[in-house]
Length: 160
Image (tube, rainbow, N blue to C red; front, side, top):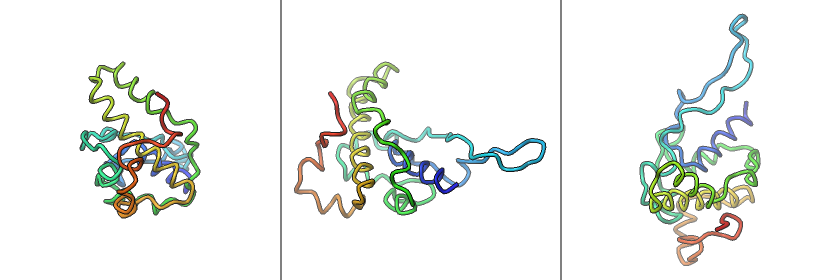
């Protein structure tokens, strides 16, 4: 179950899901014996992908978005993770794929780009977290002098 919780927290971080509270995940049980079978697939991610702050346009703005979930701050949720590499980020969609998806779904290009840029910041932060770096509001404030950390992407997160 710990692996599932870790994967859930990391996935929620990546998509900026702000509403993963104690009633937004569950278990599957055998209907006859009521024995535990597995964790339920993730559901109720409707408050994600920067829906509460669509104009978050840098890493600091994205990491400062508060959640109404297990922990208020995203960085505090990451502190609960035991296995940062439990999800394979090489399988995550690229920033371009996210943008193209939203455009195909009828979102205007400007908003699709805002969403995909925020996703790109989060993807970069998760890569850093998996490498043992601390992801936090304080570390983003400390790096304000590095323009890549504010408005750009590292090479691994974007393929335009």
